[in-house]
Length: 239
Image (cartoon, rainbow, N blue to C red; front, side, top):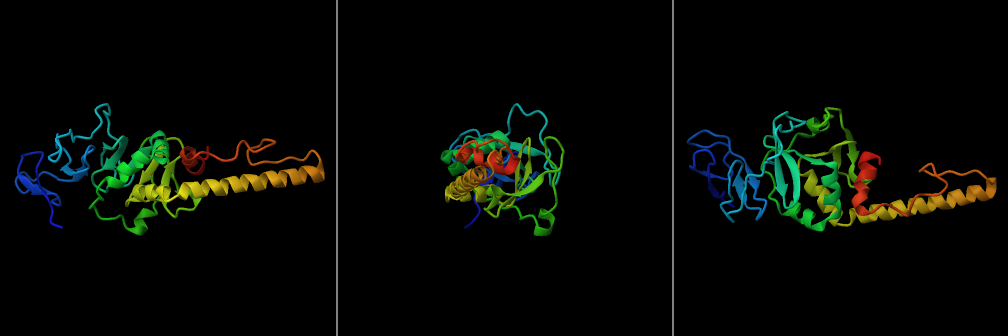
């Protein structure tokens, strides 16, 4: 498919969506999705050329942009539907804070907005470099690399207190995993594990009287299992 033609947000000259630099003003060009119609626009454009909506997706309240935890370039606030996150213009990495990610895990409309966004044309980070431990863009502490939902096969970088770092379309893969029933299946396994724990607890109490044990440090498991929206917090943040 041929690249579409847009106008450079710096000088107004025509430029293809796959161009990395304006041929006239030599300004750097990179495309993002319009937060309203998801059509491609150049970063820095004030309005979408497809639907006319405001397309400058940087958050007005963010005075000091976060630094990308991989390439240290400045990140910009963007919106995918109602989900706001930070994106690195150079490597395409995405930073999602903890509260936003919880809402994303539970809300199918937010998930649909992520899937509707166009895939990045930036080159993927080499596998050898991807294994490097990264620092949280909020607190600077080294993040943990964890398998999302313990069974998805999608390894993401997590700061226990602040959020999750995604790269190489990992956020899209996580959303696809959730919508395919991955979190529901994980909830079932969690409930089964709690039921087995309860059975073993009752068995030990029957054999040893006052001896009790549970993973929560209580006499009984707290509940039958977390909700889908809370699942990320237990697995990723240990809460």
